[in-house]
Image (cartoon, rainbow, N blue to C red; front, side, top):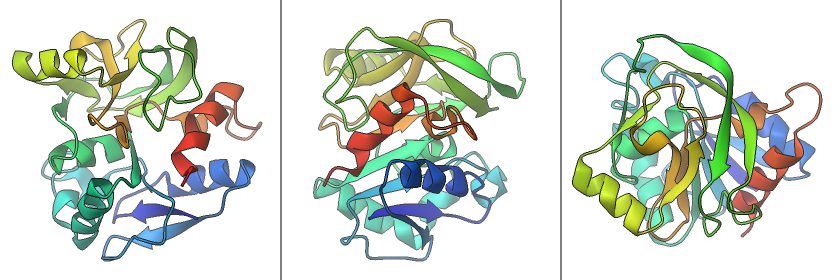
Length: 216
């Protein structure tokens, strides 16, 4: 069973649930008030606008009761995936380094972006091949990954960049589209694999990305 965290303002939870149903994996919605996640094989923070992004994307969600549970869950080795706004929440909560800021041209992006697999030891990429390139949907205004030079160097040296843009759509430092923690069990990415082929069946790339997340 996968737990999909729902904050006020989340709007991609049904896409994630539908994607996992297609994969034959049961997934249920979990309130932002929940404090116990131990019964889930994985936890996913979907896209949307948690708490309206009124202060800063993901900044208010980090104070929800469920975030303490997610931190404990991740520290015990649980699989945590943050997609788009979920990535923003994970950085705000300190579960992943860096931050997401506004796209360089200050435009909301709703498009496809080609990404390249940079490592295969994370829960997202363990069924991929390093160097593979494929297209995923993007849908964000604050998807520009930023960090200081020391943090970027640390991410690179510890092989924590999981996906990189082939053609950078938003100005992200080092063309970063997704990163993991050092252990590889917490991953955040801006593209939406759950929307790849939406309505027509998940693409094979999306299936290979999402399946290992649910492995217990």
